[in-house]
Picture 1: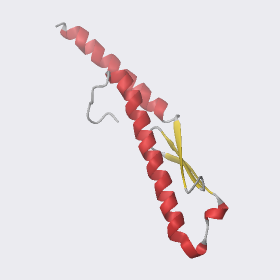
Picture 2 (picture 1 turned 60 degrees about the horizontal axis):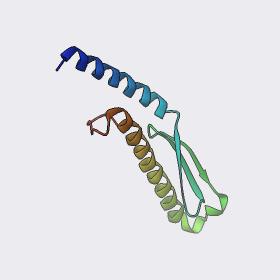
Picture 3 (picture 1 turned 30 degrees about the vertical axis):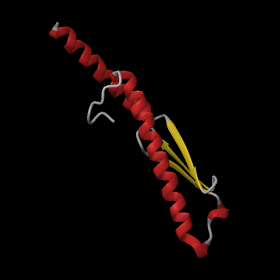
Length: 102
């Protein structure tokens, strides 16, 4: 094995991963709960950038339901963002699971 070739490949992969992490900041996923009454938008780097609540979802006598819908929408968006990041990272790593990259 050519050590220099391996080092060059590792450096190229690292540069691609850094670029991907930057790109994920601009990619978004959207999730909803309560039949679309609560919508959450998150970046591929798992930053919540938007939360929309339909006014009809606000029932002062049942705040717990609204809270549950918000939690569900945000958690689902986080899962979708993680899947997006893992899928994109697998394109670079060839499917190898490298701890700490996503």
